[in-house]
Length: 429
Image 1 (tube, rainbow, N blue to C red):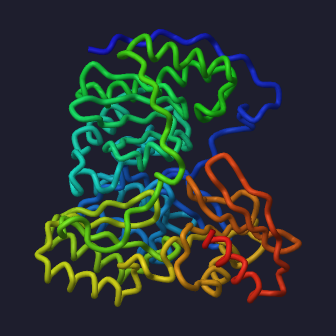
Image 2 (cartoon, rainbow, N blue to C red):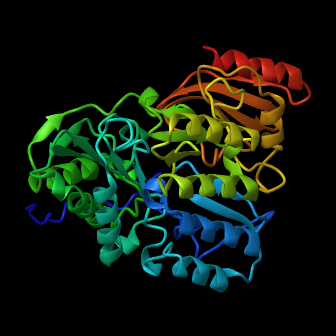
């Protein structure tokens, strides 16, 4: 059994540093809606992105009853509902609670858990037991209710896909064992038993809250260096031995390729700009009902439909999903293209980046591209990608590799053909 983790050294108050909280946690949830230019916005946490058809039906019912009818996927495998009426909060919460999508009102924004979406489908171990237990422990911890909506857990099946996302607490399956990583540290801790992984993740998050109390840091990376070092040492003293294991390179954080998974154990589809209309969502849900009875939303705004599928039925299902406007093959022009909501949905956006992304779609590039309407870059991907940001002077294009950013180029707003060519060239590098 893991020992209880002692309190880390208290964190010094940051005097105006990036780690200091400027105010309350503003991340939207389902009980506190966020105001946007197209109405209120709710973000529904879906731990591990895993949905059964009943909960998928409930999300669509909420979108159609209270919002614009569309479901928007996030970079953490969650769902956003947009265009909500300002007075719908109580009815929305009741609908989601009845569907099992809101198991704890106190923890609704803390349930940020990403998991390897192909776990158990591509030869890697299943993560279902870890996911269910971590969510249960999280919702049972009074302390964990204080986690911000930005704090992130990751459960990695061993391939490094979500380990590369830079979560605050990551658990990695390694054969019969489990490794625990804190933030982006290169040292991981071998847990005494893989069964202890969910509890170790929760205890690490609770230790972070104690370490962050004075500085007000939202995430592990926001802690002062000395406090972060002490936090890692404290967690290590209560777990297993340290192992040097650098975090996977950003390129590991890649979306599953659209199409059949393995020998049709599942189907993988991407969603153009992460936006699903009701007919698309219903088709995905009906496909899940006929086969694996589950949907998995990925951190790359895609969806996995577990099977298994008979080969011909897999081909038929992919044709139907493609005809509905979803991405079912890696050679689609939309593969790897993403964008924030942009204008007119967001008042801060300087342009309609979704329309611009659509106008610039061409042959698929080697690198994903993300279009942002302002410097906040809401929902941007992780790893290696092409960053396109609207500015008053034009669109700034830069190549991002994890924490590194290449010198940008800027294309004027009045030259859409040149902008499309510049983006295509950058993606081909």
